[in-house]
Length: 440
Image (tube, rainbow, N blue to C red):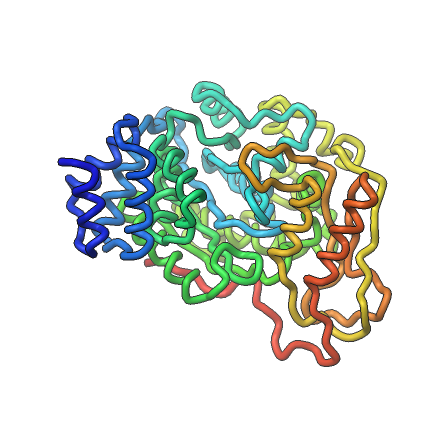
């Protein structure tokens, strides 16, 4: 068999056999198939799609292209959460300690931000000393002692995905649902999960802007996850405005620690509400609770008792961070005093937000990255003061840009101001935070 035979077959709209797919993924892993041939197959998949059977084989082949993690020595159910990404999407920092404090092992393999979306690893690295590049041995040790660990994808985990992900970005095939599914499930499956909840974002700041595309992706993720032996559920959630108030790494960590401490600002409440709901589904899928109501009650107790904050504190210490950040986040996180107000240009109601543009504005001044190797400035960020449906007067702050460079701050503020639509009449309806639960 030759790579071009597989490419031609998919190019012409035929279904690939399991042998075709495994041959190609083996070649990707071993470096015997050229980048231009991988790129050709990616485009053929983008244009012609894949059947459920092809999707499942592709995911399984990528999952087993490298090592898989074995946590069978940890006598707890293993569960994780994945988000398709957005702006201000920081729920992992709440979910992991809450769920782990309930008695579930959470081996969280996370990613970095790219483009307008933030990354969990970048947020965590704003905590002084916090290490996200753990060896397999360190990862398991933290899991055993704390209950959850947060680390990046190693070269040994799903290496075919790492290669294909880079080429997807370079060949404009990122949006192909079969490739998204295989990428996500292969990485999560390699972490030895029993259960997984997937937060599929939809809206102006989401990877999938259209709801029908987001729903199709959610169904594909759930079906493939279940086929790989992971009890999987997806929630469609809103990304038509930043989640919570904070956008930017240190500011987002500060918001999360304050929520774990019980200091719940109104603007940050959606972060807590969504985190609790995703966590409740994790407890049910992991078979710790029989109902969402019981799971929600358990999580509220864990949060209000301080156990979730204590679990977070233990994780920070175990991964090399300064645990004093849990007592006074503003003192120990890298923050900046220089701010610039984003003023509303007119009076009226906030009716729409170009959320991706807010993410791009912060990334452009150092809060994110355009290329995967770009450096991140953890102090750069934005605090949103208003949400869709709020009334605003001319000159009142839509939010505040945090940046030590005044010229950069002004540029970001102008972009963010343009991202808000202010009309005379309020919107007909407000975007619901949680839209749909998908089980199959």
